[in-house]
Image 1 (cartoon, helix red, strand yellow):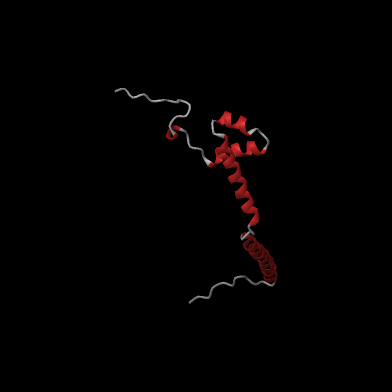
Image 2: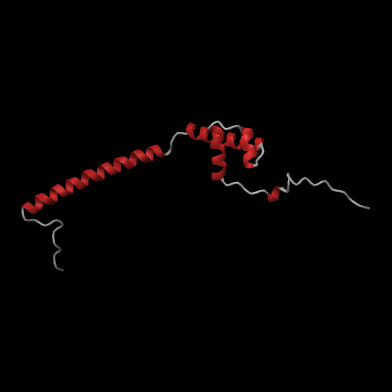
Length: 115
């Protein structure tokens, strides 16, 4: 008995299709967001239109979530800025005190006493 199989070379095995990195997906999604036709991009890159639409939707949803979230780093950024400002103030104060001490003939920090 002879078995016949139908072979569709265009479809191929899913394992033979190249994997898409996040950067490659972003490049394609940005093309869609810039206004290129979904069908044209789909034909050009060889990925089904529904898959490209899903990538676009995932990309937009992630961006939407990013905008919804309060920036947890905002508090850390504020504290870092305050710390940098304080360091600047203390550095300037130390320089002023060092110069005033030098004018009076003092050395800062003072030399160590012998033990």
